[in-house]
Image 1 (cartoon, rainbow, N blue to C red):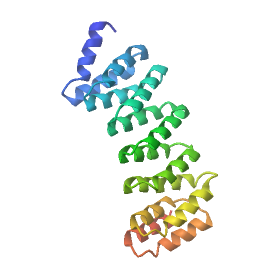
Image 2 (cartoon, rainbow, N blue to C red):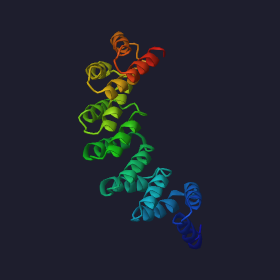
Image 3 (cartoon, rainbow, N blue to C red):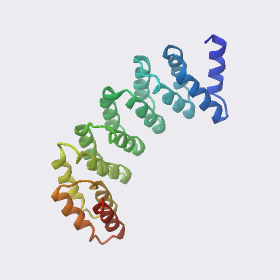
Image 4 (cartoon, rainbow, N blue to C red):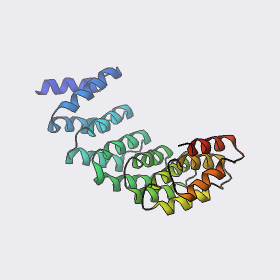
Length: 222
């Protein structure tokens, strides 16, 4: 690809029409990393949040040291929650090496979108020790969205050797005054065959809140 083609591609990435931007991003994904990554690095420092998000999406398509470092720098210096969440998602494409970075992002952020997004991303992995630590931290968060993500994460931890710790927390949460938390517990227990979990499900089926009872009934049927 010559310089004129590169310049044209950079213009398309900045086009007003979203379909043109998407087409340019798709084209970048097919190019060699040594060509694509510098273009994306330049795009990543744009002040326009939409362009920056486009850049971090593209960087996830090129698993090279340069793209990894670019994403890491975005995590360290960017303040936009949407960009940070997108960058975390792209970093996850790099596998285990990204897990500590996601954990650090969660711990230093106070934004509900970033924190809940990281939890949901880690729920797709088998890093149960990290997931448990973040779930416990999220239960202390002031935002219900983050708290509820943490409860669902405990449901994933039930599949691991850390099951007893997760179950102890879920047992406590099943008696919480917040029906939203009890509702999430009922959902989180789905698929767990532990006798204690089954007792919790049976108890939640009798909950005073119909949403909690309905969720527990559905969990019991699985």
